[in-house]
Length: 333
Length: 107
Image (cartoon, rainbow over all chains, first blue to last red; front, side):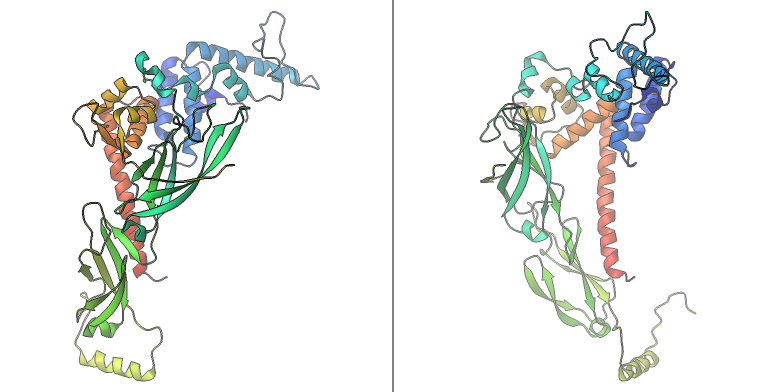
């Protein structure tokens, strides 16, 4: 990680006052906030902006940072005259790295060094969340919640089903090393589950630090986000399913009985005579099953013409064209 | 790595305190969000009876991010959340319509 110039991140001069820094932060934060921005790499950019503001809007932290910046500049100036990088300090200049010599050398990353001085953002807690001290301890005894997406086929929403999932739970072992526990679960998925719906598996999240992840009552939870998979035949419109049904021109004109798939197997459909391309036929109760009722299956007719036609068929089509006084284009005279 | 296999039935609701825990929010702060109708109980009439839909957790986390990171007040956050939901629904509808259209198009 390279050194980060927080003034440059916010686009302000190092001599900028607090108001200028706040205005610059607000403008960039609203531009890059992940909840409202669709720009690429928005999350990292936002973190950079937030970190810059965290330092520069605090008088004490800004003073420490400015000292670092100054020392770095002096170090680079002296480096031009030395074969090895050493922070250059003039006589009487207080060494800002006093006490950190073992951590900082010419090759050390400034951002890492900065985090070691000020700590990470996560550990400081969130602004505005004024913890009631009577409740301070309630968050300290449970592990982190996990979240993952669970793909579900449309057919699996019709009845209660059980799906097998595998995932990894992070935990710290007795030596304080981060490990991964592979877990396999059979999850009961109720009928009528919808896309984006979340379900909670209690105790299947990460354990609190220092606690074994197996059989722990202090584990966080696992949240599954249901994602309905794209189906080869069906599209979704609310609770209804849409089936695009190819039919031949003569089937559209004369009518036909055709087999169509549903989520529970095939059924017979009567195509009325003189049907149009794009016309939708409704089959009640054959759509998506929800907790309250079943949607409908809407069959959208798509008239398709053969890719090759025999000479005899072409003759018959020509006769039909002469016979029928049908004009499909409304703008023709 | 250890493999464990078990069967579990899912839950669909969170109690008031469970919602506070999983969003890392104090109860006092959560009551503020409920006052502003950002978190709305799906069941129950009193705090000890409240049950929240699992999706409320995502809403609360989003609201907290907007409030803490962008310094937006709760009334505006409620409006923003509604607009963001509308955008999400429109995107889903757009995606579904494009999928339907593509079944008719050739080339």
